[in-house]
Length: 72
Image 1: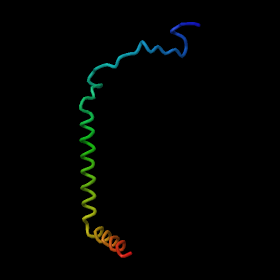
Image 2: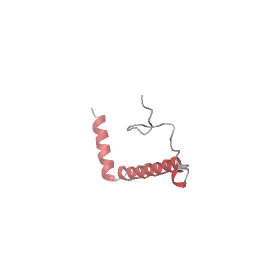
Image 3: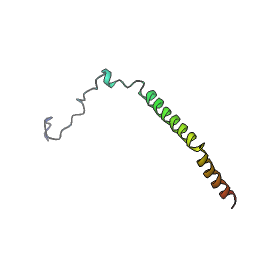
Image 4: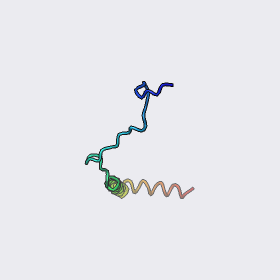
């Protein structure tokens, strides 16, 4: 058996390259930033739903659906 480290397909797991610790690889606080962005998007979506559902036409449509469902 040949122990040639330069053989095709050979992967030496002992010679791993450690990731650099530069500014581009620093992800400290990224989870908090992502949480803040998702929270802002959820608030914006909720505001849009409130404005749509509080309009007169949509309110009348919903009340008609509720009356029809309760009349069965």
